[in-house]
Amino acid sequence: GENVEQHPSTLSVQEGDSAVIKCTYSDSASNYFPWYKQELGKGPQLIIDIRSNVGEKKDQRIAVTLNKTAKHFSLHITETQPEDSAVYFCAASRGGADGLTFGKGTHLIIQP
Amino acid sequence: NAGVTQTPKFRILKIGQSMTLQCAQDMNHNYMYWYRQDPGMGLKLIYYSVGAGITDKGEVPNGYNVSRSTTEDFPLRLELAAPSQTSVYFCASSYTFGGSETQYFGPGTRLLVL
Image (cartoon, rainbow over all chains, first blue to last red; front, side, top):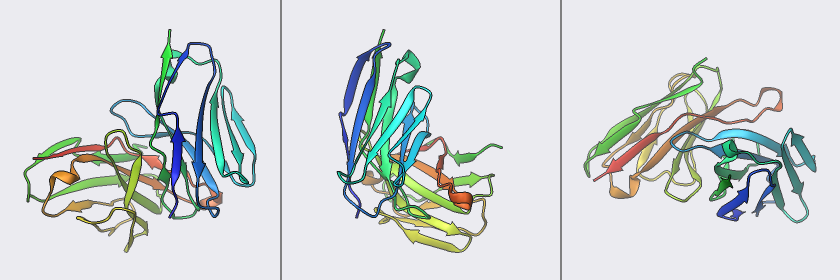
């Protein structure tokens, strides 16, 4: 089955700086790669996703890049703000009804 | 729309007891999922359903059962609770109409088995 590795497990950045979280996946048939943000005591919430036919996608301060050859994808957050502090999960799926395989998460801490 | 709702929010069970975790969605999604999240870990898929009357096992199905009698509801049943089932349980739903695969998650049920 699919295996998703996520790094780092904890990331501390100064407010206003950029943050990058990286994931690798093992199943070459995976074609859908979402990123979720989870705040304390809440369920995960989708922040951005990318499909295998696209190399990069951007939404305001958030961007995701995908390298299918190397089987890795990354989340980039620019101009970080205190409200960006949370746990971020990457995931991979073959699409359709397939469930998501999640990475173990990155705790992002924004230092004032 | 309320989205995905889950009850209860928190429950303590004794070893060997049984319970049902409730999940409902009002978005007319055909696909529904149950995940568990252990401390410091990502979510792992327990069971999923592609429509009423159809369910299938995920990565960690042992000790659980599900049913899907309606589009809206997808309860998760724990029989003979064990300490290893202490976790936070999340229900999610999605639909693939128009190529969308976004999974929407509920707020979770925190379960403690003692």
